[in-house]
Image (tube, rainbow, N blue to C red; front, side):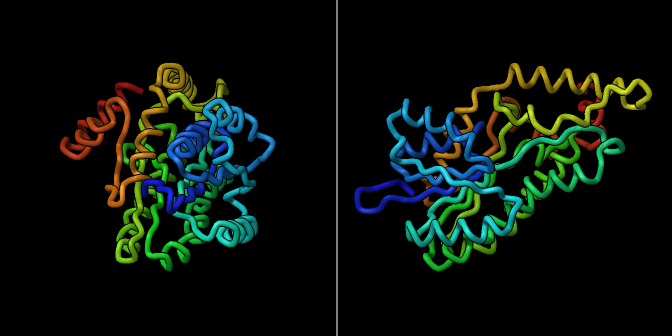
Length: 282
């Protein structure tokens, strides 16, 4: 939905303190939206507000504290937002991180934490917003997925599994909500220069006795290389803004170097060829 003088759409975004969340908040504010930028720790709002001031859009952004893993906060924040602004037109579920490590060496607690943030938190915030969008017969829900939600890699099974869950949830939810005029969208970025790789990578062990020692070291080098050479995240931000402004957006928006090629090859080639190529690279 494009902003107009008669109607100013409101965007609610999670995980807005950095990465795609920060950049998207500023971009949408610049495009005329009023952005409710939520984050787990409000003390980390400085970067966002500084960026917004540099773009002269600070008045279009309001920072809100919200931990997506805490249901009581969701139950308090969303109704307050509705009472104050009357509507949420675009929900962007961006909060998340990448937990790494080989499955045998990743504790169940790490798995649960990964899903609590990347999946159950996303579902919880979405469920809180759905009744309002359904009643107003309009709205767009944009879920930040990943190429890892389409093509899984060894050593990133918690992250890949959480994003595969987001993909399945979003497909089903889109079919449920289209009759009510509510769009559900998946943004599927490849590798970009954000701070996602700085979190959740503690499970790459350097234990000399680990049977995965060499694989861990190799994968860690790959991850570091990706973090340093990945693309400009503004490409993803532009795609999010495009989806937010489109009255009839597509379900999926793959974005990034080689992303469409990876998806096509996985869909077309025999699986043994795919796994051989992945294992050779990793």
